[in-house]
Image: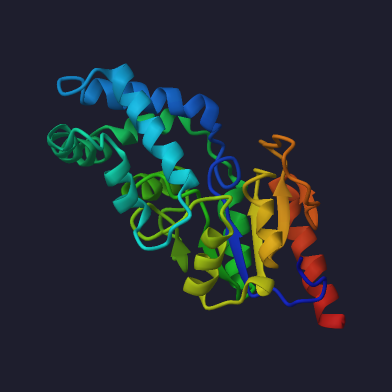
Length: 247
């Protein structure tokens, strides 16, 4: 568990439901509908959704670190139909370039996100986007743009291509810590998923649970150090930093 007085040097922000207003339970059906329509000439849309879910669920359970999530997914998706998979992949790339952006209308903007991230950077913190890396970087960069954060120079952004584990695997958080060159006990994880984000405390990270669009499946047994809406985060963080300075 984290030390109450360990000085924070890096802040990891979840994306969906934290820095943007996307509710994934509502967004994903719209995403699959758009993707299915785009590649429907190659594969029946409902089958596509099933196969993507199947591969993603296997990816989430895979704790190995030898391959990137993108490499793992390619092996897990349609494993017995390589020819179909190879025909689909170029169309997936085209979908993210040409059609994914149309989903922006279903992505509510969180006006405070830019203010919060900018303020944290001005405090001298290293800042990472710690979204579950089951989407390619092109999709994550677009979602950051929708949130008004497209031009922010983050120190690290997790995506399928550069990550080797997924939440809530502790290896996911450890990899970010290593990329930032900041030990876990000096990192703060900020996210709205109590099960998948607050578990970072088991690695020694500090935690803040964002409750604007809270997810709590009742599996987590870890109390976050702080919690509340994103609007309250900066005051909480500044108070914590002041306490660190006076310790």
